[in-house]
Length: 386
Image 1 (cartoon, rainbow, N blue to C red):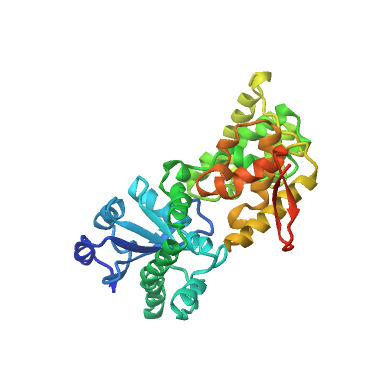
Image 2: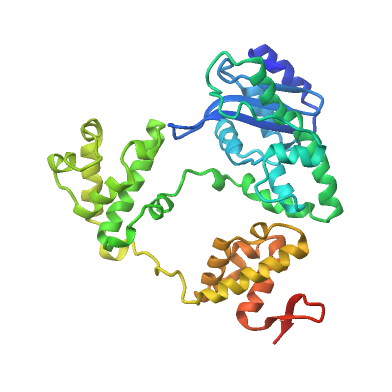
């Protein structure tokens, strides 16, 4: 069913009032904009299934009220971007949420599994991804495009039931609830922290604290502009150009406009604002300047991380899940850094939920020297008390 009018939407949503689960997917374009340009919203209860056209329907209230209903489980596959769209439309998070990609990883079907693969694995069906590069905001949509979009939710409900069965059998249903907790936290959908954007810029360590602070303020300004203009930050000013602004501290529009990569049109539009940001950043007290953490993050030799990685590999084989699902390289690195800096280990990601017992606590025991690794009589690597 393809819904293009408010009356159709109202009737469809009325039919979903008693549904306990809703499979949800979205189609969008996000190539040059800050926010997603929504093209379709697909919803299925198992009994009723439709693609809703948000371009032709200006008021999506009946649908959004269903999304906000805490008595209905909203099922997604790889939920992040779909939820970013829906949370923004609803003005709030929409718990409870179930992510089939997360669940698949926890039953041993592989990390980051595609929807086509999960449908084949769970249901033995093949779905075609022929419309992957469709411009979902262009109208009219073909019958094939609409059917392709609806397939993404048509199979989500039976996949969900299959996964729930496996999770219960493996006693891992609570694992999934812990994993998707972030999707139910408003902080997850807050605008990006400029500090995180800052840390992605190359050659930061070539800057002194004062210049680094200028760069941080410029990045924050650019982020705000990108939100207001609904465009990608790099389309306002490239990272490399911001870095040069921070390095050379221009003081007038003429000098600013001569920087390579800073287009004349943008210079005329935002040059004065940029100079103002730089001037204010130069007045920030010395004690408040940005200082980067040690380049190595911690002093532990690489061998310690390799040891922990080996243990993660062992545990993942025992649990029949991918090692990266248990703990990836970045998480292991930050875990060691957390330990070295004598931070509260209970706050670390690997001490949250099911991971604490299965990987966090054993890894801490390894780091503390309370246990070691040994090869037993069966040739298996296991923990041993020291």
